[in-house]
Length: 278
Image 1 (tube, helix red, strand yellow):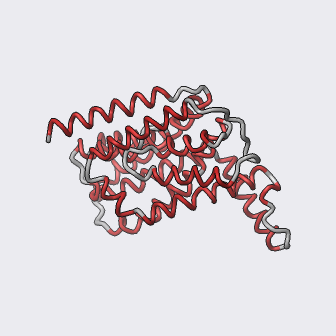
Image 2 (cartoon, rainbow, N blue to C red):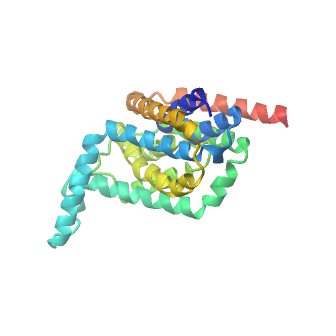
Image 3 (cartoon, rainbow, N blue to C red):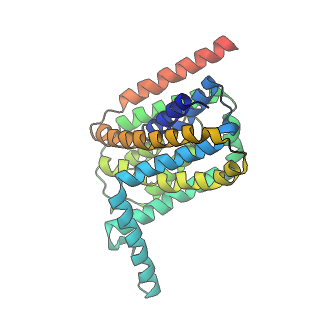
């Protein structure tokens, strides 16, 4: 893997992780284009996810600090017999909603892990995932009234968003697009929908890193790849910051249609390639 390939892969990972165009699908397509075997760059893939995690922490660091502080307050309340007091503050309720949303995602990921991995063997399945992404973005664009704050958000809404995030494990299905769709269809106010979609990516991405890291570090690491890997991870973090800021602005202005057109065009190109190459 060259510096150029690492930078391109890092750029795509950072942008596609948060823009609703599917990072997994784009990385799989690029690796096929570059002729890079996925197993040979497993460590790089894991570290790219770390880079995108850094992006979320940089943009939402105040919210994350507040969530951590509220976690300790919750533990204190439990130890003093006050109970969970879920509705004692917006931050505490947000934290519980993140936990609730993560549960169905984890269950889906663990139960259907082999199925999801099998889908990566065919680029046609990636194209189908992109088509699905385009449809849910189109629906989200036309969604109804979005006025719920975090105190009006119900557990069923969090579960629905978590299920959508689980579905997004499929290649070509955008995680950010799916969780944003779930949040908007639940009636969440648009800025809250974006924040919730990105905050619940933290346990999802972190879980993926933890599961893949042992296998990645067990592989023989080529020292010559250190430079390209570092460059790719830095680019992933920087482009991730740009993508998050872009999504906050785009969703607030109800301009998701451009992403629908883009993913459908990519899907058409992939289907055409499959037909031509047989």
